[in-house]
Image 1 (cartoon, helix red, strand yellow):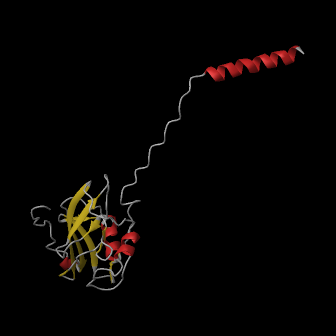
Image 2: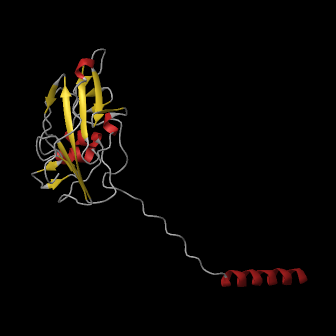
Image 3: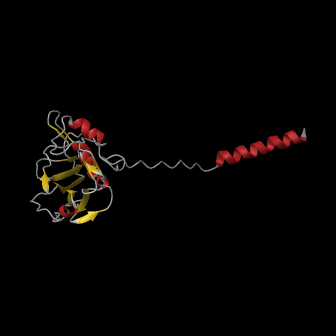
Length: 208
């Protein structure tokens, strides 16, 4: 009987301690930072494996979704920067078409897009921070891009594919290249002799 009394007394003490312990609310988990560009870059871009020229894809909304990006009702302004892209194939420039990432029928726009054929890439995100890659732009364009090819043009014994940023060689996978404000990006496919006179600057107009 004395043992039972002792056990009961101990339980009462424990209950009193628990009831009188200060209440500490659980720490709220930090909300995940989900930038508009979604998860990370890929080492390659999805799309056509044909030779240039490459026009704007027929289904812009599907191409933007493949890049992991949303279609917006209007351009964002939390991040508003521009980069310029030159593509040179066997010594000749390739035109970047207008309206990559723009669905004119649905009146929707990707935060990553082109308005004209100048090669200017517009990055206009409604959330910040947000980063975007060259691979995402190529996926929106539906042109396949990796370290060993661009479209249907592959690296071989005599042809190289090199990326440059502001005239300097970029050593990573071209698709992983992060777009930054006023970068001059050049993708050059051709012989070693054709890897010369790479554009290093772009003449930006007012407003860009």
